[in-house]
Image (cartoon, rainbow, N blue to C red; front, side, top):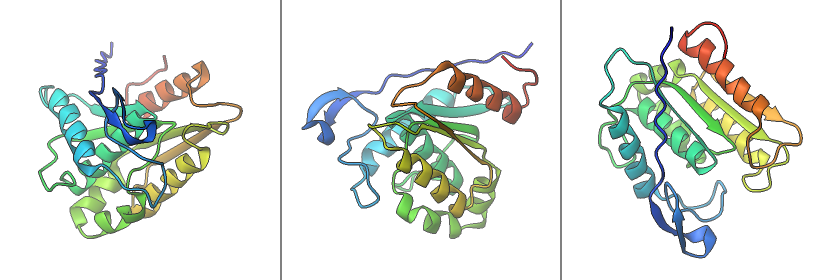
Length: 198
C-alpha cells in the first residue's frame, strides 16, 4: 500500500499591492500579472525556502513534490525553477530534490528571463529536463487569465523543461472541479510510480 503525506501550509499574512495594499494570506507581494510586471523575488524566495524547510525533514527515500493553486501555483513553479538552477533567486542553494510539480490556475513568475537562467548551466538543463510538471487552467478563468497559464507552459517548455503536461478545462473559472482533481491524481500516480488510480 502506498502512503502519501500531504503538507498543506497556509501563506503568511502580508500587504498585497494588487489589492491596494490590503493585508491577506499571500505567498508574495504582487501587482498585475504580466510579463513586464515587477516580481517580488524576496517574497518568492522566502516562501520557497519556507516550503523547502517543511519538506527537508522528510526521509531521503520519499518522493517529494510541490503544488498549488493560483498564487500557490506560481510559488510551486518558482520552486521548480529554483530546483532546476540549484539556487534561489538570491543565490542561496535550493536544498530539495523535487520529483513532481503541480500548478493549477497559475503562472510562472519571471517567465521572460527563464530560458536564460536554465541555459547557462548543464546541471540546470539536466534537472529541468527531468522534472515532470502538470499545469492546468480553466479557459473561463477571469482572475488569472487562461493565456497566462498557456504562456507559462510554453515558457517552461522552451526553457528546457521536457515533461510539461498542460490541461485546459472548458467553462472552468478560477476554481477547481472534481474532474481536474481526478486528472491531478492520475498524473501523480503515473509520474511518481504509485501504480493504480485513486
